[in-house]
Length: 379
Image 1 (cartoon, one colour):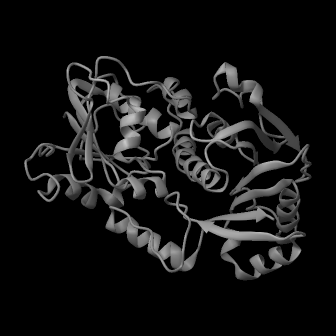
Image 2 (cartoon, one colour):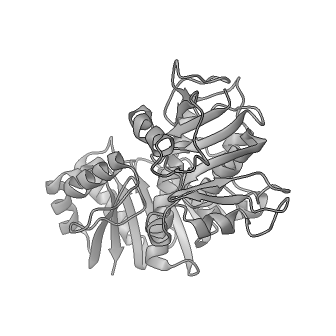
Image 3 (tube, one colour):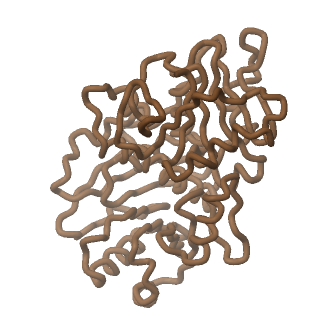
């Protein structure tokens, strides 16, 4: 077995395989997979060093170097054009044979930017394909919507990312399914938060970031981003959370730029005013009134024009939103971003996607606005 195809989950296998196996995008059979192409997913709880189609295994098994000839990324895979995504692609290049390749979908420039997905130019810049390694570029434009990455004379640059810590400390004897899920989810939510920051503040403006109730992954990943200018990041966590290793995801030169504060019984105090505060799925076990008080407190911790980024199921409840909005003390603007791609929802426009399945999911999300990411900007 030398070729694998990576899916978001088993629900997308048929569509992902068709994207590469049909002759629509590969008329000259430049990237056509072999008949024994094996599917692996992001959410599988089966970890095997030799995956087969008898059972769907996880891509996050710590495979040996040069385990595969080709690795295909399905159009369902949430691979964003940020440091996390670059670290993941660099890892895949470690897993392929010297004459192999990583085959992946890329978007047209504008569509790529709006989703924080890879476009051709961003892929070329990140992996230095304009330097000719072994007499050829290591980034090949195969066909419409498809590119491949080949091993060059030197390794692509290693970008700072929390994923590096996970990959470097994984072994077949210490696989933690919960840890795998945390890191994969962080790859998605950090990309969405990063794009929101870009859309509100641009790529160069100095930003202070604060995450409430997290485990250090999001606050670290945002601090390490090469696409935004986060000058300081803060993690506010409960007193019963073990904070000893919370800075382990950061290189030494950035550890001083992450502060860790603790709170007791949801009594959060802000030591300053932040450009961005995030609260990601931390309100589940709190009464509605206490949730509103906590959100209002966080909103008051924003600097002028700062943004509060929240994902919580209570925002699916119209009554809760009305009560919250009536409790906010200042003028504010409310917008909503997809939880699937890094794009703002617009009722009149559905977000495009190569995957028909995900396109329909985005249409449904745009209609219902359930489980989306909410933005409250302080005006």
